[in-house]
Image 1: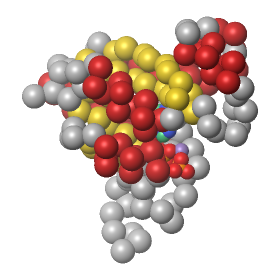
Image 2: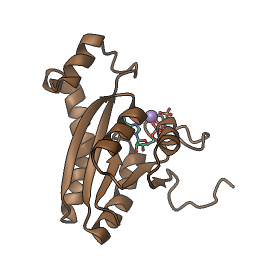
Image 3: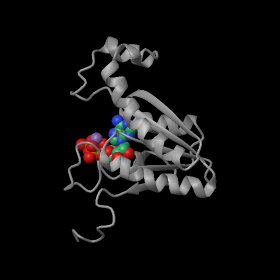
Image 4: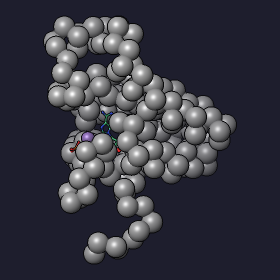
Length: 158
Ligand code: ATP
Ligand code: MN
């Protein structure tokens, strides 16, 4: 059923929370886990110029050690949990608009399940879903498992 499971992560606690679920499913299906961190080129926190974006796209992320470290930390968390469960795992970093990059990755890598958090770094709990998750749900036809930031706290806000 599932051979390649994608966990897009922005390094947030909520994304990390989704990893446990993803790895559990992956174990049951002997699936390969893919961790993807998208460097959000429009995020003001990065303030990337067009030239830097090009360099990243050309694979020269090592020129930007801070971003590299952030990406490695995010995907490394997924890799560690997957490895603890003896699962094959691959870490990927790309640059772009996160939802678009996730969709592209899905299409190019035979992904058959996406597991992601309901929210991410901005984590506004008053909105039902973060914008990246909402766009992925709208734009892909794959099954997407959305792990809620509130976890087992079911119905607490109902
Ligand atoms: P918003 O970004 O809309 O202000 P948010 O940060 O709370 O809200 P999202 O960004 O939609 O919510 O994050 C939801 C999930 O999407 C995360 O848990 C993660 O799985 C995935 N995600 C978000 N940003 C990225 C990214 N840059 N790279 C990979 N995955 C991401
Ligand atoms: Mn976000």
